[in-house]
Length: 184
Image (cartoon, rainbow, N blue to C red; front, side, top):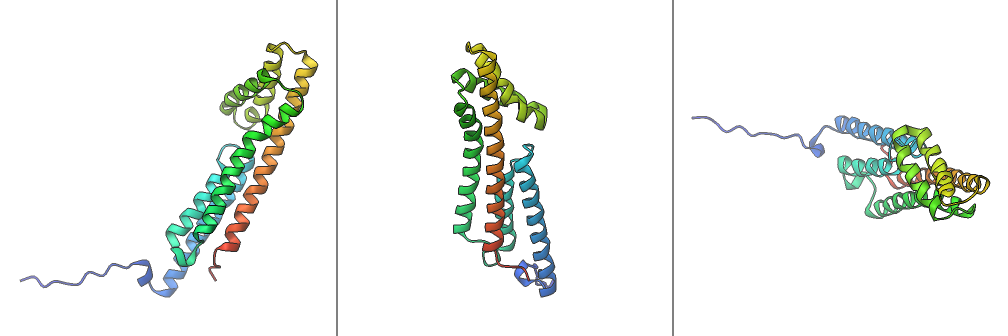
């Protein structure tokens, strides 16, 4: 009674070449915009910068397929760089404060100041660990001058950590652009 009509599903491989090219350029644009947002996120701690860059690379691979995106070795390198950026971020403030003579009280104060500083956006994240380090050192019995020195070390360590994360993010974006086949 009813004739069976063949249903054609337009899979990406079955699209017209011009349409496929525009889809590919769209996903390249989305990937590059996400990577730019991630790059900005390494300086502004509102977004997890290197994680956004890694997510952009994963999205690119999922949407364009293995033949038009990066391979597993590149994913391993990008993941290792992401983990290294977080390790550098945590170690920067700690090593800076430690280098300038902070004690355990100062370290605990820096951690508490950083956690409280999260709620005050960028200024809180930069100033919170410094105030926490100074407060921790004063609570621990140090004088204001040596506590201020430890706070200065926390600031320099945080700035060094941000610079290191920025360089790692630049390396991640560069690695992706070199490893991925060009869309044109």
